[in-house]
Image 1 (cartoon, rainbow, N blue to C red):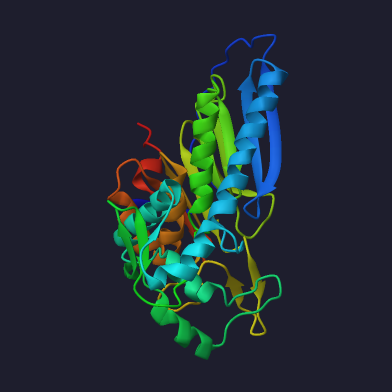
Image 2 (cartoon, rainbow, N blue to C red; image 1 turned 90 degrees about the horizontal axis):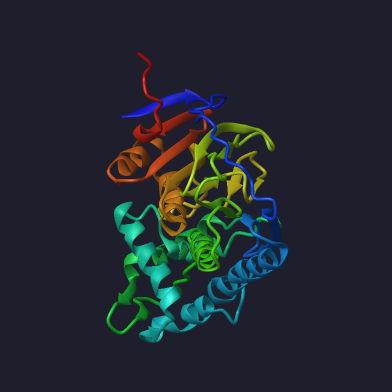
Length: 331
């Protein structure tokens, strides 16, 4: 079951509860740019010294993950894997193996709608220059887009590619992993109330000291305007949209970065997908999977997953909402 709504509606509001604030403590905010996206951190801390330490350590997490998992860095672990894994098993770090293992899980769940080997054709696009591959280039690259050709050995913690030319791209899942690591660092430093985001991926730690965090889902065709606002706490939220990286081609079509593993071309029929769940590693991968599957198949998949909800805005600007987000009927 799911609800279909216009994009101008607010699903729910929660009553507010106010707690007295400690005089020496306050909210602190930090920001940075890493993994080609803006990083924003807001949290409650007892003093400025603690806040500065927390901000420094949490923001450093994103640079560490970028150095390890970016396909744009020749010296990253992912780039080395792409160069060598077709020649035999390559031992990888526990963190990279964890991300690849989750990617495989989401790929199996979505029957390949999410596939990190899309990088085998994704590298042919240049969104800054407005360049897309020819049909011939896509036909040549598509046989290498198949998550089943990435072999993970759990015992040896190695990765092997079944054919040459495969390029794994973790752009659809690594930011979620970094957000989760950032939350772990916050908890280890004693923080209990925080909001941490990296572009479209967010984790909320606790509530906003007696009130929910109000999270807006952007209207895909109106920057600065929300299609819906949700009161949330202690969850992960990931949004994939066709407005994040795109250009309009000579035919007037929107060419964006969410590619179909089947065609190698930008997915049509959806403008944005927002997933709500327990951890950002999962919600990040699922938001891309649902985008590729489309509203009907995407909602069917999400309704089978406990603790996961979704908001899909399709290309007709209609909103599709999973059962867990449907407001209760009033008596």
